Length: 412
Image 1 (cartoon, rainbow, N blue to C red):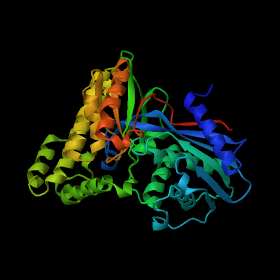
Image 2 (image 1 turned 45 degrees about the vertical axis):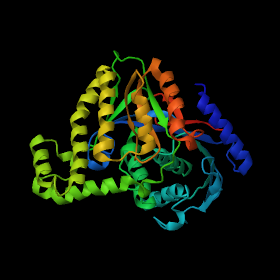
Image 3 (image 1 turned 60 degrees about the vertical axis):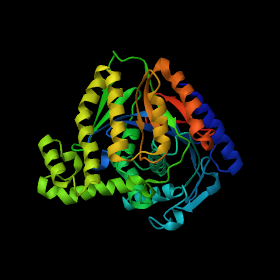
Image 4 (image 1 turned 30 degrees about the vertical axis):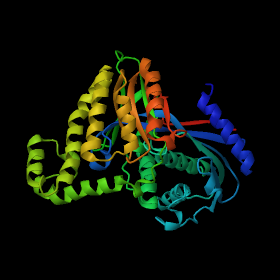
């Protein structure tokens, strides 16, 4: 299969990086990992809900080659100021170290840390150059990076791949235990298990994956990334961390009395109403977070059924409802994200729009009739730079395809 235009551009970029850095990458391989687009329930993973989403074709490419030493040497086109990341296997800074808080190197360090903790013997190093066109927030660049690095470390060291869910767990652990990011597992699951043209349904109770084809009656539509041009810092530095703590606070406050261990356990309207009556006045912000999770779960099955039947209009309408509640009840969005959504909502043929990912900044997303993508882009081009002139050369609108999450290609 021929490379796509984005793969060709990535190859050219990686080739230039290899020459410029002197890293011994030519002759190796390229591992490509995708971004993801969550259709539901955004912020549901750490609250225990079922999840549904697709892999999307904004990618991270890593060209790599064993170097015959015990050193790992990496260079990222996206973080040139960090220079060459060079370390001996097993010799990485302590977890959550302030010294690495602002460098992307914390991710390869974290992969070394987690793999060793899990009992994997790492003795073979490699050289690698990386490039990504995933927006810096909203479409899971960090999860894509962690998965890519874990698979590369394991392959280079000749280690048999563990169970698939183990790989996603370790990718989450890199962020939770080493970086200090309180992320759930939505991003890792939706990327690693993504398949071409399919929706991925994850049930956390059984830890099972079900692939859901898009119904044959579906209209021609596109998944559109609305990259605001802003870069969100890690989740450990964002509103996400606060929202997660609030949800855990409500569980600690009311879970014992009402019999729930996570907010997803509240599926019954009567229990929901009782919690709201008990805590609505004393803890209105916590109840607002519950309101979003409760109603998003009510919409979830309807959304998955609509996807399977090809009713993209209903999927879009639910996506929009979720976005309004994320904005008003969960209060996890941001002004640039909502500007993108406000613009999209005015365009005929946009079926639904909302913020994506951890919140604050990064990318919003939309489900759009294929014939309306150009009109959406024109509306964003006209309105967004006027509102944020400082981002005029940074924002972007991308129509995305549904793709597999992981692919290995011939190298440079």
